[in-house]
Image (cartoon, rainbow, N blue to C red):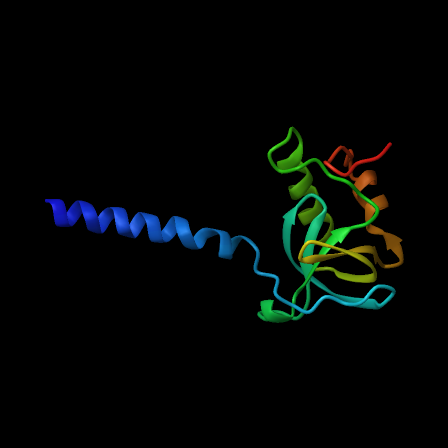
Length: 136
């Protein structure tokens, strides 16, 4: 019985230990400030963070923090709804972005879909701002 319990604990711990790596699949090289780049949205991490790039190539997906929209954090009120909204508006669509500064392991960028700013599209879809970096 002890060996079985040990095996269960090891299996559960291994699953928990690897989960953070699965949470962020975007591994592409970040563009330099001022660079214009484009791609299809492949992953949405939260209400103002996403990745774009070629299908089935997370090693080339660029992680972006939107420059023109500050969504609530996932753990805050409205955070899950903000993520769902960004998925509805942008997932699978082509963005054209202009790289700004870096923030951790992502680039802050102003992005458009069909020439329309993504932040404006999120607000038009009912998005309200209020994340950690939000400024009124």
